[in-house]
Image (cartoon, rainbow, N blue to C red; front, side, top):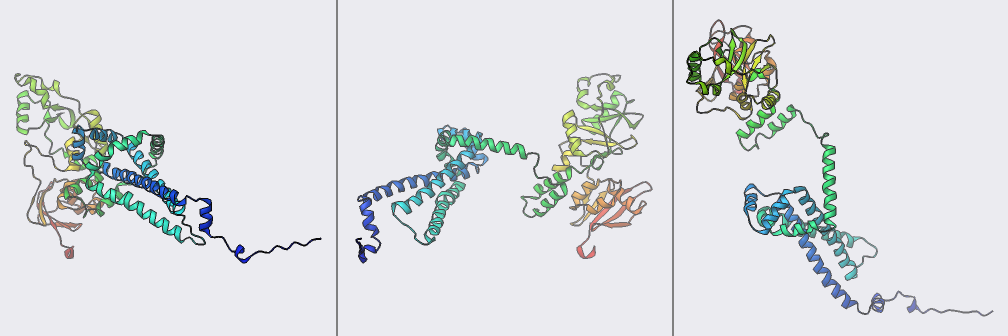
Length: 460
């Protein structure tokens, strides 16, 4: 048997030079790397432009104000017309921008990784520091050049940005695969909206009122804050709380002559007047003054009762939000409020309901029927028939203690009588919610005037 001995030199046992192997594998590496770097950088620059344009356009399109949209609507350029077409379909526009932006950002990350690892032949043997630095560097670059800077510019120049990007966006949106994905994304969004429509978050009036109170200092104006508070209280307000009581209602007896009716119309100036038989508890109709216009020249024997319309009756406890819907459906502006015994308690109009949100509505024919006067910063003088809700608005109080303490009373005078158990005499008073209510004048039947004084914190 022959023994074969194999000798290895020390040099042959060492690892070969990477440069020698690389050159042996690709002798033209330097030429290929230079061409690859240039091409890759050009593509990378194009991708950054697409990312910047799409993210900037997203910010610009959805920050256009009414003036900018009007300029686009009246513009005759191709970009202006394209902008308006894109704005007509906001969901498709947003889908196009999001898909384009994400495609560009993903391509930037892939191409950047290729440039670092394949073109420059950079490796990280034995550790992950290079990968971490690469991830942070690429992320920061994409955020800065592709998101932050374009959106800052777009927020300051939205009109210029949308006119500059509208045509490219319209082209991108019509090209596959963006056009395919856009349809899928919009369809999925619509499906999700239909599925979640009935399971939306619900919030009760008390929680909403608390939220509005928390934002009181940051609200745009006192008027806006007051309207928001009126909307919150709107659904909890009953008809009897804002109605005009029967003592204040101007009504016509069926037995009145035509001349008497015309005299009352001229004197009061109302456009609608209830008509009753025997007493106001038996309202038979509503007289619309416009229905009398064709008969102004008729004689005093004219049968004016033939033009009255049927009345609409509502219970005292009917919520005014429901009543507003009925007014809209029936196309009427006035209702007769009846109590639990079927008697007429008063009237309520569409104007009364709207005033609960936007405040008093006065036209050139309204008289100066002022139910209160301001004596100084903390002192007011009210009539006893002032509605409690109006009293709360004037005094700037929420009226929570009043609402908890009151029973069936809806006027300030009625509240005082209810709390005291009797009709207070002059200069007698009660204190509720930091407000001192002093009776200024009263008789055996009712309290006529009340002085309301806001007490300081230490004297409450």
